[in-house]
Length: 290
Ligand SMILES: Nc1nc(=O)c2c([nH]1)NC[C@@H]1CN(c3ccc(C(=O)N[C@@H](CCC(=O)O)C(=O)O)cc3)C=[N+]21
Ligand SMILES: [Mg+2]
Image (cartoon, rainbow, N blue to C red):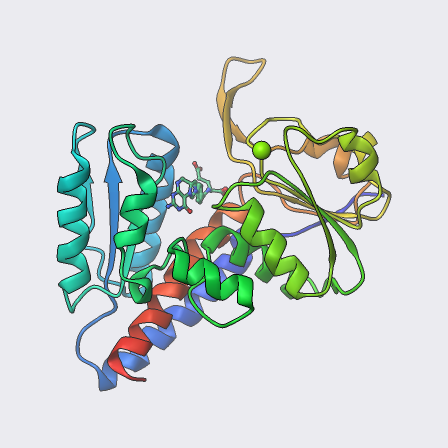
């Protein structure tokens, strides 16, 4: 058996086309475009591809990305707080995303706490995380939202299924576990201290890997017919000395066992960017009163 490929790139393109249309028709009534400000501090290479992709896609759907900034690695916390304050007060900005990780002189939670929750398109402000825990609508983290959208579009029903989430980060593991729970999955959160990970993953109908370890999940750890979502984005140098992007899942062995699998690249990554744009449009609608 070879698993169905969950094509995030194709789905992202479709949703972005819908967003483009939506933005264009909104602009017939509201003159200003949606505005997204991405703040990237320092030169973390993991962020480079993401920022580039967001800028291209954002501009593509008609979002104004001009308030974004690439800031020096030596920036102080006070300086970053001041920039967030300015963006909070700027009526042309609907979404603010502060790229993580931040340099060590900056406390990321203090920055995230400062973002206006209604502009928090990354869904990381305590108010938006609280709404998620409560099951209320609100801005939701982009990667988890992208995972859920991929599952929904593939018609994968989660009710009563056992879902194992690998990784407990605030960016992915914790929020995706809550979203799976909201769809009535039985959710198990595994992490670096988990004993006998393979026994847990072999019991799972759905595995979401979000750890950042290439090859962590292989075919022997997967129950035949399970759905495997690979959130990992790892840049490695392969045997031929070429740099390439791989996930946390050993794609070759898992695809022979799973019923559906996301590739890396072209799976969850493009969906993350797309959910960010969707959140920006959602925030824009709210702010212009539509
Ligand atoms: N506040 C914050 N929110 C984030 O959501 C966030 C962050 N910080 N810091 C960094 C990570 C990483 N991340 C990616 C998103 C999309 C791709 C993506 O589009 N990947 C493409 C390929 C990109 C390439 O070719 O390099 C793909 O998987 O097909 C990658 C990485 C979001 N992150
Ligand atoms: Mg962990």
